[in-house]
Each structure stands twice: as C-alpha cells, then as structure tokens.
Image (cartoon, rainbow, N blue to C red; front, side):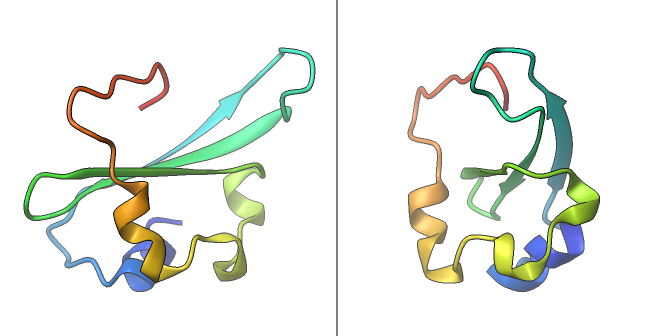
Length: 82
C-alpha cells in the first residue's frame, strides 16, 4: 500500500507513508478501513481512507494524483485517526 501511494503521488523515497487498518464497531461503519497518511517535503500532512482491508486495495482504489492538494490536512486540523 505504501509503494502504491508513493507511485500514485510521485513521492520520493524519504517521504514517510503510514498505512493503518482500523476496525470499527459503530453502526453503519465499515468493519475494516485503511487509513493512509504521508508528509511532503514541505511538511504538509496528507491523508485518505479506503473502506477495505489493506491487502484488498488496488491502484484503482487510490485517489487520483490531481487530488493531492485536497488530501492535505489544514493547519490546526486534529482528527482522532491520523
């Protein structure tokens, strides 16, 4: 998953990419989702979720590369997942 993310967003080898599977027991929540977080060289945190287990994710499940700016967490953003 991290290598797929690197290719999709053209991230260098020094960029940190974290991939986590999160289980959810809340009603209406997928039983397992994968959260991907990465930081660009400018220190901007980006994140996205895929509502599948990490091993089932394909390149087609990733956001388009032109959406990268919209994946950036705004200053002061604090989410409980990443």
